Structure formats: C-alpha cells, structure tokens
Image 1 (spheres, rainbow, N blue to C red):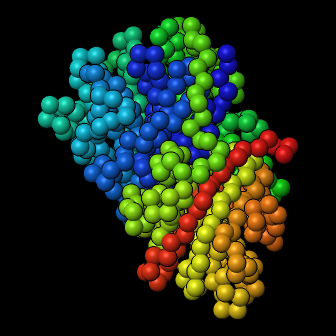
Image 2 (cartoon, rainbow, N blue to C red):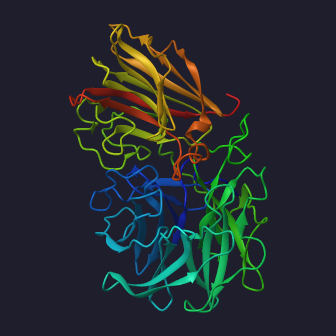
Image 3 (cartoon, rainbow, N blue to C red):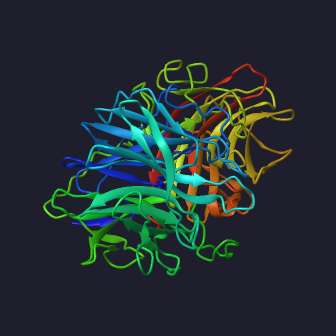
Length: 542
C-alpha cells in the first residue's frame, strides 16, 4: 500500500499528528473559519476522515471581529494521562509589530468531547505545543514574538513548565533555541528519544522558502544543537517538485516502531504569467497536509526517506491493511436531514437561528441577510473548501430582493478583501436580476454594472453554478436547472491564493472556499432559501 500526498487536500495547514493505540489523529489550523480546528482520523496513514471541529462553543473560542487570517493558528494535539490535550492559539492582531496571540489549553477523554473549559497559558507567541516528558512533567513550547521594531520578530522558541495540578504555567520561561540564519523559527514540537530531547521547528517563512529543521540536547536546560547539513525537509531547491512549501510538521511513531512526519505543503498551479512572488505559481487550494516516512541514522539524527524534498508516494506502515472510510461529503447536500454536514463552516462565530437555519424552511438552508462579505462580524455565509483544481459547485436559490442592499448567491471566497460571487439582487430598471461581483485586494467591481441579467418574474428558483478549471473559473446561471448560460467574465484562480494576496497584505494564510451567502443592509433580514448545494470534483481532462 502506498500513501499518496497530500493526505489532507485543500486548506489544512500546520498538522499536529498523534497516535492513540491503533488510530491516528491530525489537528490542523482553521484561522477565522468556525468551528475552530479540523481533526481527521486514520487507521493506515493513507486514508483520512474528517471527524470533528472541537472548538464549537463560544466558551472555547470567540473570534468576533478577528482580522483576516487571525484566529486559530497551529493547534497541537497530544495524548497523555488517559486523555487528549489540545493547545490552540487565537491570534487577534495579524499585522505590524504586535501579534496578541492568546494560547489556550483544553482536555477531553474522548476525541469527540466534551472538552474542558480553556486554560489561558500565555500571549507571548504563536504555534504553542505541549510536551509530556517521561518523568510526568509538562512543558509548553511556543514561537517567541519580539515586538521591537529594530529586531527580527521571530526571537526563538520559548519553553515554560506547565503544572497540570495548578492548571497554569509555572517558573520563569527560557529560550530553548534561536534557529539558524534562515530565521522565522516557529512551529516547535518537542520529543524525547534515546536520551535526547529533539526539537523540530519550521523556518524560512511559510511560503516557497519553507523548511523544517531539527535540533537536540541532552536536557532542556542545555543549548540545542542544529542537525548538521541540509534541512530535514524543504522544496526550496526543487522548483518543479509537485509538493511545495514543505515544512512545519510533527512526528508520530507507529505500533511497529516506524516513524512518520506529517507536514504542511502547497500545490502550485503554474500560470501563464510568472508570479511576482515565485515562478512556481499560485496555490488557491491553500496550504495542505502531506506525510513522509522518517528514519534515524547511526548518530541519532532523523532523515526523510527519499531525500529532503519528500515524495508524493510514500511507503505505508508495516503490518497495516488499508482502511477506507465512507465519504463524509455526499456530493450533493440537499439539507433534508436538518443536520450540518461537517465540511461546512462559517466565519468567526457560531450563527444562531436568526442568521442561519435548517429548520425555518424544511429541506432548505435559510440564510437571513446580514453583513457583507467584507465584514469581520456577522456574515450569513456557509462555505466549504476547494479541495481540487477542477470541480463544479452548484446551488438552487429562492430569493426575492426589492432593494440594492439585498443580495444572495454563490461565492468563491478567500477573505474579506478577495472574493467573487454570482448573486441575485435588485435593479431599478429590471427589478430582480443576476449580477457577478468581485473584490480584488479590496476593490469591488460588478461585471454587468448597469445592465445585469433580468430574472423572469415567474421564476421561483434560480440555479447558480461555478466551474473551476485550474487557473480559471467562471459562473453560470439557469432558470430551469437544465439549460445553463455562461456569464461574461472568466476569473483568475490566482486571485484566491496566498501568493497573490500577500503581495499587499502580510497575513494571508487560508485557502479558497465556495459557498452560499445572503446580505441585507436594511436590517430586515430578508431570507434566502437554498434548496441544495453540490460540490463535484472532476478529472483535469473534464
């Protein structure tokens, strides 16, 4: 059996992997998307199933007003003392000299919860993780942020002892490691093996210069020495490798004593126009998760099997038979069950029945119009990840706006400044109409301007579709669900990528989503009823 990378497709960065008996779990970052933290489960390291978002209550997470790409950065999932430990960071400030990262800890005996009330750990830096030493003592390690404008902001990796009894950090923190000249030392994970403490860190920044380094010491109070030679993992020197941005990961040992390293990666689309950031292209799917097999040499240093760039095909663990899961995405969500599909998320906070409802119009998702797609507060917006470069997404909408402040429809979304949508709205000349609107680095434009597409008065429903085809995508509409008409603008998929957006904004760490939204600036909460939402991945030849 072979593992095919990436194992978690679409926006799933900063993996923290743990094994409990014969089951593996990976927790990944969700940033401003609610509920917080994605957890996938596997029995064979090759096939993964999304099972839960643990931060699903306001007592655990409140991201109201969080800026784009704030929120949950690099959660850490571990198992010790008969329970799961989840450390997570809620980043409130993303740009400038300060980060204001609040690090929390919760525990649960079952991965599905219930989870304890959060313990506030510190606000000193992001990417916090908890190390459980063999003597029972526990230590928090995190990226140590330096707010001084005349210093590099990545000061190093800080370590602080944690008291489980007192539920707080104790003693004075100290710097374990400052990294190498590549800087941007972050994503720390500590391990103990054969008398050594091993510190795995990411460096180089989470773009194409990304890498993973390893350092070790005999005690936590000694200087950590960097592994000689090249980084453990990087694709900086391999511009044509299909898996790019390799770095920021964590280790797991199998029942048979083999080792694997789950890590962040990205798959670029090569564009006709060379990227201003890197000629490798653009990654609208966001940062994903891959896994590599790891071995230890005679001197006790780790190495990636196949070399420091990693491989797309990876040898699966010994003694394990393949374990496939039933797909948690049905292809077409018809909203008949009255329950949320786990792939859907909203932005920043949980939405009550006054915003999003599966009960108000049975068999439909009802979105009561709220803020625009530019808002960091209450968006009536339900979406799921792009997980393929080639797919169709489609919905069927019943909606009757009567002002220019009311619109609802189908979205492709990266953040509040970068999105597009095909929407049903109102126009002084035609009444109910279809328009295509986009925001490019905060500048909003309408494709049809003064002459949108009229909707027939007797049309109860309007069908809306997006066809994503690699480097481009286009919206379509129908009034009967059978005959489709293309809209007049073809969008560039690069506009929904980290590489494009980071040319202007420092923080752009998520990935493209597609979903349904409803906006009402009048405060009347006009409902938009969506009869279904389908997402169908295609082969590149389709």
